[in-house]
Length: 96
Image (cartoon, rainbow, N blue to C red; front, top):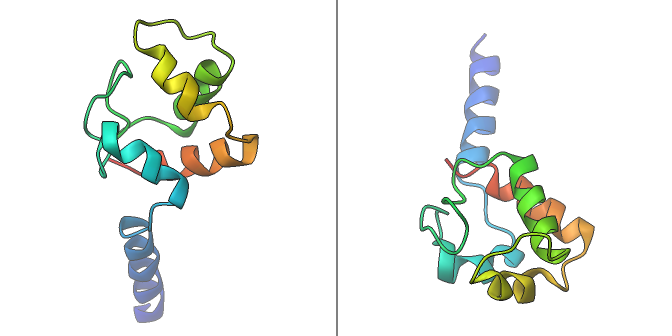
């Protein structure tokens, strides 16, 4: 039982202290390290599901999201691959 508790604690700690992927460095200026700053998105990144993040990223890349400040995000995501967007979505969805 103690081993199970220890393994759960290690797993929880690794999630809580997961290192941001290098791709997230571009996001920090507008959205903050913890994802709680509201940039041009309608809400903060923290608390978004993986699918919500993917929808936003794809929407900006495809230019289907229209807003006065959308060009900034178009330029941020235009060179991201699907794998890059998946990496970002996986990380951002852990921000609470």
